[in-house]
Image (cartoon, rainbow, N blue to C red; front, side, top):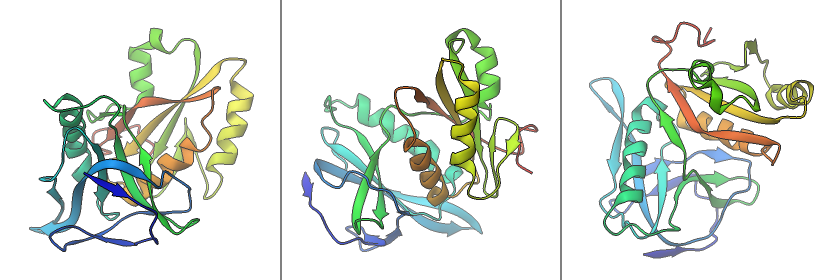
Length: 236
């Protein structure tokens, strides 16, 4: 178990076996000190011309917080299945301890420090069902919310059926929430293209979290989809 102190920002982290990970870089303040933690490493690698995640988690301890150090160049399809598996093991291990959570690491350019964002409680749906379909199939659970579906692709983002131009996502989203809420709480439903790089995933995730408040909720389900299996994903 270790105590992580404030340190100057490392764009590249070195694991115990001296392999390098280039972590995401974000201009967002996060958690900067964690006690009693162990770490998971997901390295960028190429095998048979395919990008893969080379994973090292042999030093994880169930009774500690877990920090996920993930190379920013890895696409979601290479890391989400393993993250889901590790989440389950962390929560259900023999020595698991209440109050111990999962965190992503990144480099915070505002404070020049290594920072963390908690993602405990997130459930990744990897069956290529978009949130708008899921809401229809489970409508009773979402009747009292102003439901907004966000889709994040490598080259574009969508709010419901509207494609966003560069830099206008948050401004347009807040205007849309104000216009459509009609007194109800808004719930945002996040859909991520499985080809999205981890750097971009964490950027969008922290961006959306920055506007959440008691009136704007984020569904703990995150929909990871294969664009080849979802014809109406808005990926063009």
